Image (cartoon, rainbow, N blue to C red; front, side):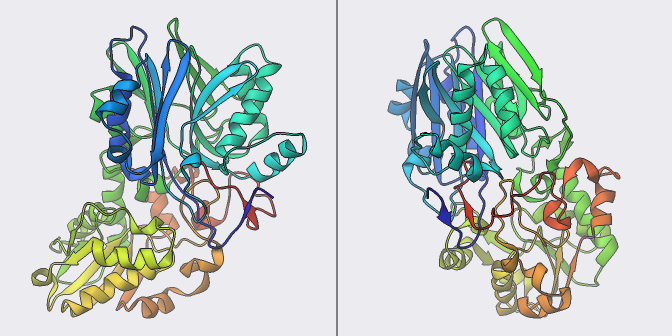
Length: 474
């Protein structure tokens, strides 16, 4: 079979960027390069850019960070008037160059490049069916399933938009897509809007990105978010929008809690302000009398500022972060995670010694990293460490593209809060409640996916999903 047996059930998470310049006056490859730079936090395993050069799609991609994969020579070769780019996180499976994106395929009606952020829950079912019908796959990512379906549906469709709509009838799960054809740049968002995608404008050029921080970086003006179930096609003739039926908003709430960059806006909402409000609400629910409040950099910092303001306790830096190390949470091997924690953070001993510390983090998954961080604070002389988490307990795995393991490895699904505190070595542990999360979002939490907290998934999850999966193309 073309699937891999799951060991840890990891998912991954990625970023996409695209631009269409009708007059060809902008260097679309370099703009995409800088757009991907702004999205580097979303993927550090591989990078790629595909460019439309007068109807021909040329591309370059490889394993590595954006500045490792591209240089002036490569970018000068990628000339054209439209481009898409992708950054990818690794999984427990292969991180081969062949799985880097964008995918570039040729088929009966032409050729296209595709970049995908998200994860399909029925990719393995579709792939088995297509293979039985004679299809041949070159990668182990679910993005190729999407590309294969679009190419097949295109044969019997009047245009590619119709082929995409037919494909959306078949695929289930999370996907934000950018598709480059010889004459179009197409943006697609799944009917639930699980993964983010925004549209912007720079001069007379239209661009798309996973987050608004990429638009800010290239000097583009934010126009709006791509709507759930929307297909936006950009050509020299202008912009065309087509809507899929039965669309509802369910953006992943973890984008606000952890994944998105703090200076981004999603659905018009400031990520920074939400994280600060999470900290304030957390303090209201679980105040503890301490000397200082510190955050686990960087995702816990903003919530820690909110907690400190609400508690009227000084906010202080507890750690110095090595900025050249990727997020330890998503490293594929346990030993790599443990080593990375030691390399990534150094404790500011003078700030924490003999202090009662409130430590704020965004979430606990396995607990491995939290335990080591708390031990580092103890070793530095902290007299008390009270751990506060700015999200509810992660009780269920995510099947839509966020990096969480199987439920048996989720510490909150297997131990009580008091037991977890003892395991981690904390004096106390409290999570933000689901009701508190709802308060932060002004009673509109139903518009977001909270399945990792509640187990209420927005799509049906196939019963054999946990046994075999494709590597995610996110």
